[in-house]
Length: 307
Picture (cartoon, rainbow, N blue to C red):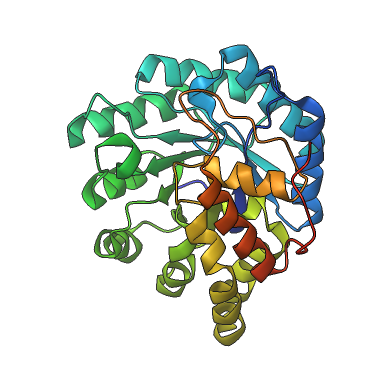
């Protein structure tokens, strides 16, 4: 039987990791961003995922970010730490380290580059979950990043066989696959959108919420969008969805998190520093981001990027 997680619902934020000009983790900005998220109504924070550029960070840096989020969120928000890798052994070690730091769960992406079979994916996720028995594990399906898809059959098999595999973050864009999971999942197993623009549709089909990129910029509005949809207030949710849709789309004009960091720099939330091989966005992308931020009411027309 799946572990019951009533709190895994609504809008969670896939946190960016702010860096200083010399490339180190900007702890002050990170703390400010956590406060900005909580003040905006976000109750689940997801550090060290794709949006957090975790693949370019050392184990020590990952621990620093996770421990900082856990410390500031305690009593106010839950923390699901990204611990995924294309090595099962490394993912196990990272998941156990995250557990020792006090996280409420871990998010583990499908192995990238290896391109495992469905049986390999099943064995990978089962081994991770068993290594942190009792700690909630969210599996993450994002074929555009990993070159492999976790099939509905494999997801459902894991959901039925492994008690602490509690949810899937689905970013395949395949609504037929997502509906098969929603239709056949065991009681308590949660389906979370990994795509801002599909969240309204997925909640209408039965999903429980979103792990969001856009909530880095707009935590209050993204939280409200999820809450309205989950409450069945479809007209209001739809209006807010279309207000935010240009921002959701602009965040992926170039490889994420390049655009979202550029937008947050325009808003004065951080400096636009990324880890290679990611580089700052093109000027035409930055101009489009400025437009959509203004349209969404997140930036005044006279605002400028921080120095």
